[in-house]
Image 1: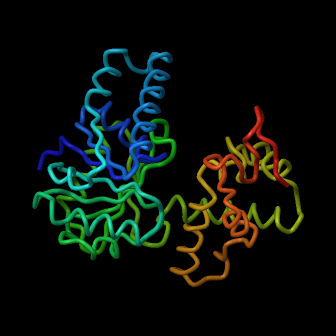
Image 2: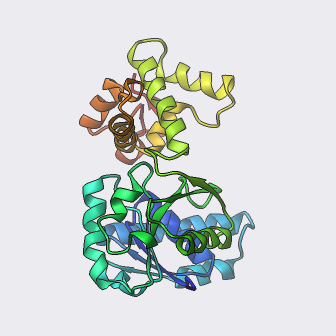
Amino acid sequence: MAIEQVGIVGAGQMGNGIAHVFALANYEVVLTDISAEALTAAVALIDRNLDRQVSKDLITAAQKAEAMKRISTTQTLTDLGKTDLIIEAATERETIKTAIFEDLVPHLKPETILTSNTSSISITRLASRTDRPEKFMGFHFMNPVPIMQLVELIRGIATDEPTFKACHAVVERLGKTSATAEDFPAFIVNRILMPMINEAIYTLYEGVGSVQSIDTSLKLGANHPMGPLELADFIGLDTCLAIMNVLHDGLADTKYRPCPLLTKYVEAGWLGRKSKRGFYDYRGDVPVPTR
């Protein structure tokens, strides 16, 4: 089937970025969220990010204007029923994701493909809560979506070949690169990345180094563009904890045990950039380490 209209569930950090790249690739985009404020903020952020691309001569002002026209918003989840492809980009909690799919299913066209942007949760298990496990797969974008080139494509046990090929073609039309991952906890990127971040938090927890020294060591010693604690704040500490819990529960190996300090920060509501405090305090002009 031809995919021309895309529905995106969730107008947060990932959802607005996904809407941005799809609209720029000439797809009609319907963005939904339970919060009107989140939808307004998402459209405003997309507008600013497109302006940044215009200022860098990456796109033209006309391309920006056309992309903005292709984005519509709604607080009614069932308005996505007319779309050809749905990408769920809600918070990284399985109960929320399954509830979204269960609400959506009765309103979909038979040929509509369902996907999740989950960074760790079982695609097979999510697909089993729908009426079309063969037309369901993982569609995992990296953050920030307009900049990052990779998209992980994850098949569930029932995903059929036409669905995989259709999603692969979408990635190519977006001008991005796909990597195929098997349906194991956290897939490829986060299976490798999150334990590294968790180990950096253990290094802080055990007093081996300060926030600044750990981040500086990895930036200058391993040529990472961001230190692991800075990156954790950027991702969101609640998301990091959720992924580590999926790894720990799914693989039953103590090496994936979330660091107690990560749990403590999440319990405190110190989630990183989005809450203005995490391993750094972002409430001033310059981020300051919190430990």
